[in-house]
Length: 62
Image (cartoon, rainbow, N blue to C red; front, side, top):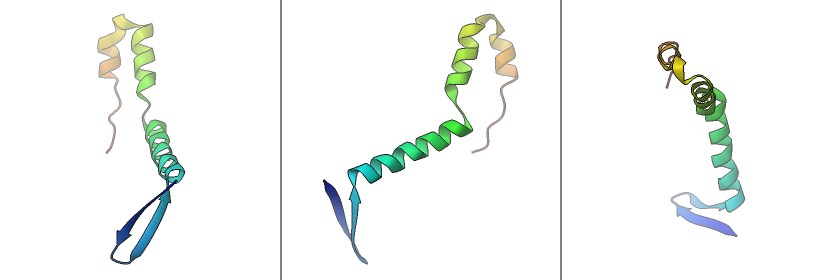
């Protein structure tokens, strides 16, 4: 199945697979930069260390 749309310069065609792959690749890049599951696992393993984990939280750049 192809999706297409008109632009001023012509017609562009994107397959659903290409759009899906692009979205997944973006999410993978984001998770490589910051994976919230690591924080979740650390907190679940040591809930008593919440204040320390929060205090040692690295600042992320946008």
